[in-house]
Image (cartoon, rainbow, N blue to C red; front, side, top):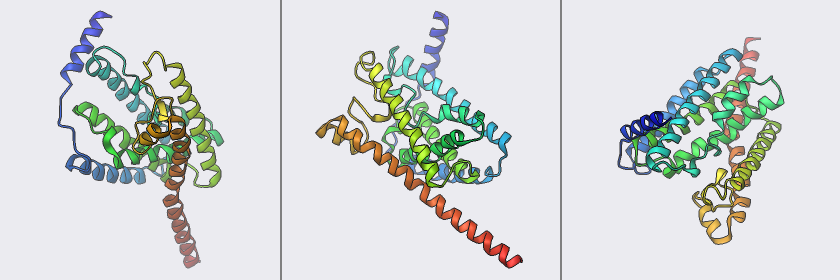
Length: 272
């Protein structure tokens, strides 16, 4: 074990390539965002006709990729950034961490309401998380190449998965599907809050999965609210705000579907 630990320590130090932290809306951020979103859209559209077997391969591949890169991130923080201590703030159960698990679980489930709820959750809530990470990029632009690229690629993958599920029709656009996705989100909030409470003392009060407390939120706007009124007020506002954002994510897909349905109806009428 000591030999493995020494190897990992040397490997992490060898890959700790420093970089000047990219500026928000600077060249790196803008180019990565525009190119990434474009590629995600094109790839998601190309794969929208994937059958069930192909869908399993796609999502399982994404899930495994996320897991492997997450292991590297955890080790890099432990051995290099935190000098052999655990970084509780990157415990792998943030809202944007959940697809790492769901991309493996969802395609293996039997078709039904539970599977569709998980797909709808990734389509609404995780697409929102991936999108917002590039709108407010302070959390993904870091001082090391590996950390910055990991964060940027990770959240771009969430954008791809959300678009792919939407375009392939595996996530529901109706209100019932949104309600089921929201139930998944609320259950995960309970799990995240439980993790925060269980690990509160071991982490030195430094864990905040889903940013819902009891530690004050570090998210823009909600950070100020939690400092003024407390974490419980911030959380009471944050959770419905996320739910609203996820609902708004559905609107362009609903509009697109209506246009496509109208076009198909017009085409059938013209053919007849």
